[in-house]
Length: 166
Image 1 (cartoon, rainbow, N blue to C red):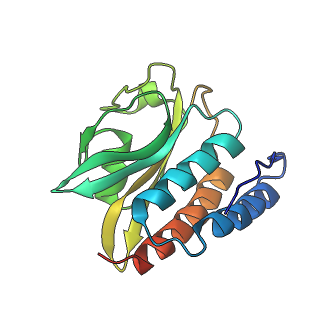
Image 2 (cartoon, rainbow, N blue to C red):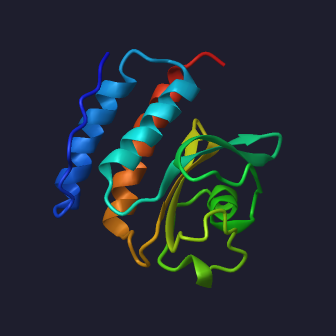
């Protein structure tokens, strides 16, 4: 399958995320490999979403989060559950919106240019797989509309991963 880059207009975030969901469905269709799907998902999000300087995955391995496919600057490799935004979202199994990462207790500064962050836990059949993490250099970049849109995209990703052989 070839992918033709589409420019997204996120002035209407609901419509933008709906179109992005269609693009993601096409990328995930017929592919069962978790890493391949994570790579394409992070590339799509990084390319489509404005003002994002990091988009990617951390997967739960032996009780800690380990970096997976991503787009952006090099990242922290391992994050303990409950530590930083990613570790907290994973431990609490809830989406975290952080308008200013410098005000988040225990924030892990992998990229000093990041100022805001949204992290969505990836849960399949009650099991935590990891998190989807997006950063922005603009404070307050992410809002509830982004959180809901990204949760829907994460659910698509998890549904594809859930079909993958273990």
